[in-house]
Image (cartoon, rainbow, N blue to C red; front, top):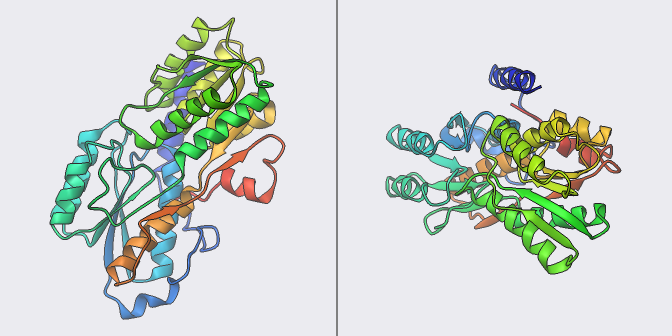
Amino acid sequence: MRHLFASLFCLVTLAGCSGNSGAPNAASAGKSSGGADQGSSHKKLRIAVIPKGTTHIFWKSVHAGAVAAAKDLGDVEILWKGPLLENDRDGQINVVQDFVANKVDAICLAPLDKQAMIGPVNDSVEAGIPVVIFDSALQDESKILSYIATDNRKGGELAAHHMAKLLGEKGNVILLRYNAGSESTEQREEGFLETLKANYPQIEVISSKEYAGTTPEMSLDKATQVLTNFKDKVDGIFAVCEPNANGILIALKETQLVGKVKFVAFDSSEDLIRAMSDGACHGIVLQDPVTMGYQSVQAIVKSLRGETIEKRIGTGEFLATPENMKTPEMDKLLNPDRF
């Protein structure tokens, strides 16, 4: 099972990087006002968009939104580059430094480490290249133009309330963390744990210290270990991001706990959507990555063109369940456009 999973994952990764399936239209990208017909009166802008990594499906949807915004704005070129994996701090620092050296007009960055990326961001701003942060916050926001993201703490709260409902407000729950320094997932983790503690005294968190890592393979190993250790006690498990959730899904099958353990995920994938139809996954907290990419490019270009932008822009958080997953709103969020 593990060898098959690894092989399929590699195929998906290669396919996702092979080309462009077409930029999404403005409606699907969450088009905001003030964009489309300005292009002819402005010089062409080169906007670097730097994700945490380039492997996971989520970032392909962010990429689609960024490209759609550039098309609607006119005279904007998107330069998309990031590290392969979301634990490569040095790799992301090098990408930022290269774009600064190449004198791009602006940078949109999803920092994979809230502390490590402060220096490169400050260096960019000091070089006259403004920065918008998206997806995951920096510990110091004093130099950035705007932060554009999901309310990740609220996403964790949604997961906690849904888990409690699934368990009848009593039972034993496991939380698998993601990666130290990732601000977005830390907010989800804390939102989940604090909501359970404050509202559901009969739910016990029996494991919340383990980090699953940044790939599905790492998550599979850690989830299998934890689920095996607590096999006779666990009633529910929460995964805070797509790669962790994909690994946990396989671990539940390998430990023969599918259906016996309530499983709530964060971010969608084809396997997780199928699992929600099959009864293996019982809910997915969703972001809107297309809108996140779209709004990030919109905001920084508006600023470059002299418009005022908000310091914080929320992109929403949603809960898909087996009961609502076929509705138009949830179907669109479960299956967003991808570059």
